[in-house]
Length: 458
Ligand code: MN
Ligand code: MN
Image (cartoon, rainbow, N blue to C red; front, side, top):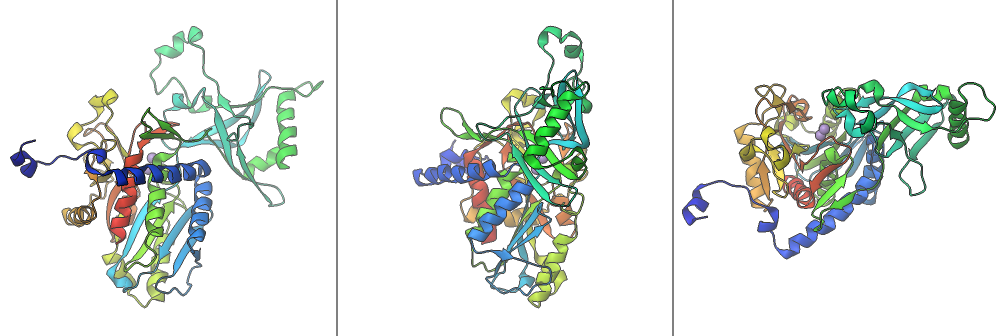
């Protein structure tokens, strides 16, 4: 590039073209910690308990609503085991605003129905109802694990995580062999599999001599032996089928990571590590791991729940700050992923305004669909603020719109935080094959996400 172009043109850069060897080593180290987190956090419940463990190791203590807080105090609020609020009280007045990084820890998956168990053709299955936006065909013919909780009739709780260890069995959704796929192959991609086809294969051995439902009975006997449950206990269970197996590097250079649920653990993890890195902040800092983002942030564990503002209100009260001024001056990074430009589907992206893997953390000024509908659309003033922070701390970053105009769209928690009178913008990591059973991110980008949240917290 000529000097004049260098001065006058804008172009984002590949992280590896910008950083030195020392920082490449940090990128590699950071990926190891992130992959450990992924291994242990496949559901929102698991992510929350991992988050609590990490926070406790850093000296965070449980917060109860209305509790007295002190500057330098480190707290976590566990909302029903499914959403987590971590915060450190700053040295200056809370009226200067809280710095909030808000990610989510639920991911698309297949939830079991409330009466899931049945037998057909001497095989036993679980009925599922998918959670979040999935391409159904992608979830067939791959090994699946089962994670979740069951509350038994007596109210006692059983935790389930089966399909991850080397000697664990896995579960499976049948697909049709190509030899008999003539009719199926004529169907549209979105119609080749219906939701009611996503049945989980869980057994085939009958109880000897039993005339009907002999395979179902065998499975139920095993479940009773393993977990002490009866079929009725599924009524008060939350069990999810998720892709089995551990995260892996992709590529000879190991520059990419393949895993289930990058969306949005790839932002939740750096939101936490950035908080841990700054134990004595001037601003009060908050990291949020929300639930239910994939189904609209609903419910009492989603970002729309008033627990968020209840906590802020109580923190303001405890430090003698005016709650409305606290909100007015607070700033938020809605920590969520964007769609990475994929040359294999170039026609769905507008290249100049798409995020690219290895080009650093992605700032998304607006999301939404059909003319920005459903987006909170951050102001130029706020973009200017965040931009200057990133430049000051050498964060490699880029902007990204989610695909071409009118190609589709999506939303994040940004709108629900912005509506509380808080400046909010989306910031996160570019993902390839988002919402597929195994998604792909670049380890340079998750490291830059950490650096971005750290810079924002300073
Ligand atoms: Mn997301
Ligand atoms: Mn998502």
